[in-house]
Length: 127
Image 1 (cartoon, rainbow, N blue to C red):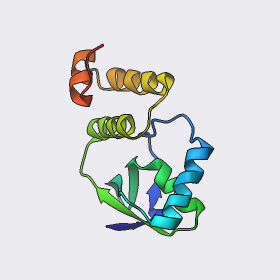
Image 2: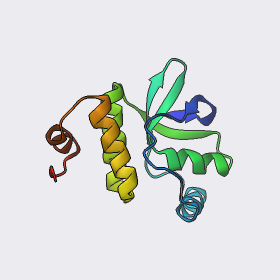
Image 3: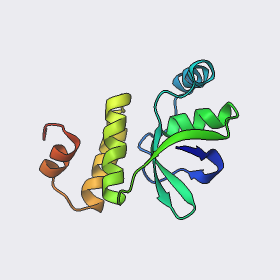
Image 4: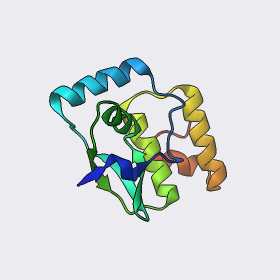
């Protein structure tokens, strides 16, 4: 479904510390030339939507003047949203060790889960 960018807000699920400008420029060019290949993932919060996955696509779309973006709305709680954000970022673009550590620590402390459970849920070895 298409969602107006004005109804989308950033969220606590941003796992990247900063957006690297060069890949963002490449993404903007790709959106201009080819359109959007993959929908972002959001969850509804009242009348607005919170980005779970797709922060770079949202930023790029705003910067090139789009008013809407294709999105998949997921009905997930905060725990599942954090896991989904982490998994999609680990798959799409390598996160820095600092970004990985920050998010993994946030998940284990916020939701009081073990490293073994965390590893199982994100599909990675415990080490």
